[in-house]
Image (cartoon, rainbow, N blue to C red; front, top):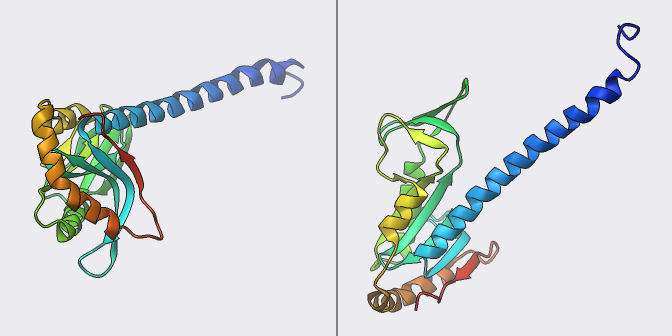
Length: 202
């Protein structure tokens, strides 16, 4: 076989192949960063304060991890993110959800029960503040058979929890602030949360 191929065959094709691999890698990284930036932008828009990577006590004396906890004018909002591509088939009652994308098929556990557990854990700490939860799917995922109750997109999240009345927002946030600080005091000191404090709304 080596005698049939030109002497410079490997040199001629190796470089283009390497460039293609690098291009695909760059596109994947850029897509992930784009989603991260978009999520961060929306959370900053609706949040007066927010916490990432929060660990708090659970009702069963264990611990529970929260990716994003957001202080909004409607109360506290827990945001989970599912980064999948393709058609998603899932419902409130299905134990597993299925993703079909480009001839590929895989399943993952219905994320809503875990979100309900996170909501319950936060409510154990802040009993007098509304606590909601949403699961964000990016645009590259589509629910062709109906959207489960807690699932949303970034645009829908912004529309649902954004606040245009700044004066009313200030009153609400000041009322929620002691409860927000209580969450911070309950956070696991061995896994400190990363906070992003927002004051520009006022």
